[in-house]
Every structure is written in structure tokens, then in C-alpha cells.
Length: 172
Image (tube, rainbow, N blue to C red):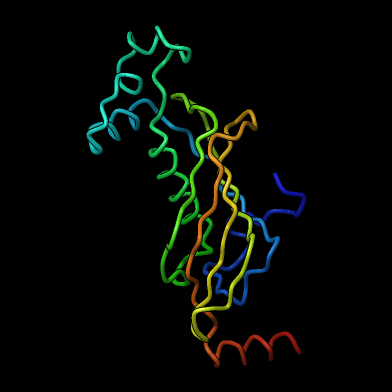
């Protein structure tokens, strides 16, 4: 993961605006274990009943030897882990794009965590909002990358009043 010390959930106030996020900042989620029951439920909800995900006998004959989690299940859980970080609480206006590259499988019982790093900021489109590209990485309990990519978000800015209060607090 990145060299900068990561922010941990609970150590920072919830909700970060465009103005409060800096290129290079890193946020690391708490871990979450993917269960076989979740894989089966995702197959039911999504309709993706590929035997690689739901059939132990079929999966035993593959290189994986066991059913694996759907990549989109893992990405969906990563989205929830991002929400748990608190940085998007009442500050995200829209999600424009997700680039997702699946790198390694997730098996039932694997524990994943998400790292989001502020990669780029663009003050467009307005004085009320700006674009932020986060570099996203999901790793398992062994430190293997299972998903990498980027998320482009439209983030609210501090209001004029919020900016004034922030300046006053900073000046003492």
C-alpha cells in the first residue's frame, strides 16, 4: 500500500469535502470477510449463477478448487467499505466512473480491505463542486491485490460560511 500514513475510520470527522481532500491522502478501510452465504446470495440477487461461483463440484475441477466470489460482489463490498470510511458522508454529489481491474480471486473466508488514495483533483465544474479521482485497491488478508482501479467522484466544496469557520479555527 502507499507510503503515507492511512487515515483510520473513527480518527477523522465524517464527510470530507473537495477542499478537505489532498492529493496523496490515503484512507484504509476496516477488514471484511466474504462468506459463502454472501456469494450464494449475490448469485441469487444478480442472477449470475455461473457454476464457478455456486457449484462446489464444478469448482473443484478448476484451478481454484473451490467456488470463488463474483468480482462484482467484491467490488460492491468495496463500495460499502468506502462508505464506512466516512469520507463520502453528505459530501459526494455523484460517482462518475469506476475503472475496475480484477487481479486475483476471492474465496469464501477471505478477508478484504480497501485502500483509497486521492490521485487527482480537478476544480471543475463549479465553485460548489469538484472532481476527485481516487486510486482504489482491494487486497486480501495475504496482501494480494484482488481489485485495482480508480473511482472518479464529484465532491461538494465547503460553503463560503464553512470556509470562513475553517479559517477562523485554523488561525486560533
